[in-house]
Image: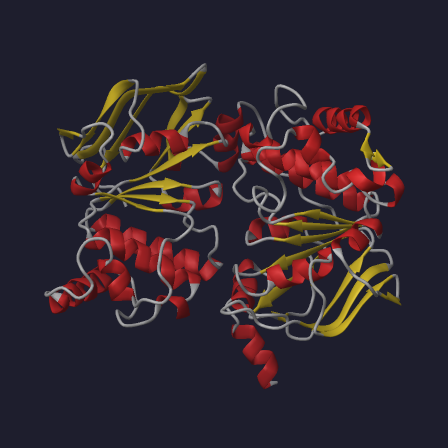
Length: 515
């Protein structure tokens, strides 16, 4: 990894300050990056990481301070200058065209796809692939690649543009453990060849494994800069939140009766997204059922079935051993199924509605209206109860939800879900789909503790997550989904992350089918 303290400084951000009205997003932030070094940039949601990277890339102009790359000042507000200086970025959500080949995606935006020099481009891609250990065929269609392979294409895109500084934003969010290890092997090889990396992640064990130094932001300021070998995960988490923090872990307990059962449920494929393939699943009272898997392997179809958004093409849904008919979102809510949707922005809230309106979205007809007239006083009191009970930090219930941070938005959705159900002692079944995606360690701890508390009150929680640490830390029983198929259930502590990773990659399904 790092070439050491005496290595050349390739990037210098000096006392960067950026204000948005009364909010100071970055407050005199300074950061250096050396040749061949991996620096982890850490901080809670809203700490200022994104603003800092936007200033580096010229999307924002700092109010004060300066940026230098390789000893030369970067002109503010000029993204092209950053690219030309050798700065590249791989975003958490890939920007690739699935109908084009690897080579076409890499050339896209830098030169015409049908321009001359195609052979030279291929040779350069093959050389970069070989030098950096990024195994992917130039002629493969991107739409047919695994998630890990697509990430290699994104890194190759940056290297093809002669990036010497690479910013990775949550790079392992959708990878299996094996794919994450392959990425780290690539980074070690790349830094040995002189590439410098800024690594943005919430996964502190990965930060400890790959980073040389950690820079921690809190409320827009640098509150700590430490060598990784001189710290630990607990100390980093404490720097991020301003105090001691431990993530909750659910203690083992005996489950109760089956509240919902999917019996041999199948759904059609939708384009490249697989449907369910004869899925049988029991959701029991007082149990957290974890569903692991790489994104796009049927989890969305399963969530739609449970939440009433879709019906099985084959198979049966049973609630307390009785077959369900007329299944719909309204019926699911009425029968005690609460939803924490995968996408809080597009599925869980309406951006321009205030907190009161969003709090009652799923229950305004059944609880807050009579003969078509809304009881806004009761609705506001309900929103205030959620805001106080779930520590939603906001000016008040009239605040537009789009103005909240991701963590506070998720707390409101969580509170709304926990307040529903027969009527209203709380939900019997909680569909928690990626409930902590994109949240900082403090918000993660809060949301997970609430899910454990719901389980301990007797609710059945289906936890759908791509984060194996979360799945293994909270789940009483773990299933893996791959290409629409569901693995057997594994009791807590009986499977390692590596073994679950093989199920996620589909390899163990092949072993079972062969047997």
